[in-house]
Image 1 (cartoon, rainbow, N blue to C red):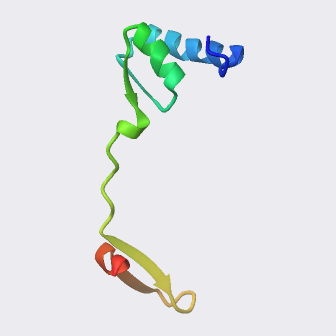
Image 2: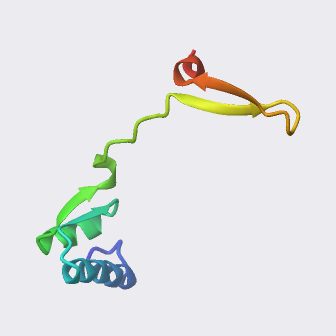
Length: 83
């Protein structure tokens, strides 16, 4: 156990891995390197959160303006936001 990890963290990681094994999980998604290392030692595939692709950006944003109840809506495109 590395000095940077507490006994409580190791215990929690082990609980996550035990649950994954009991539920027949084949992959764990995590941003925790210690958990990833333990999962790999237990033959569980690991995907680090920073390896995931980002969701696409919505090309339009709605912005309400004006008096309350008037229902004015402006639609801005992502392109106009970057200009």
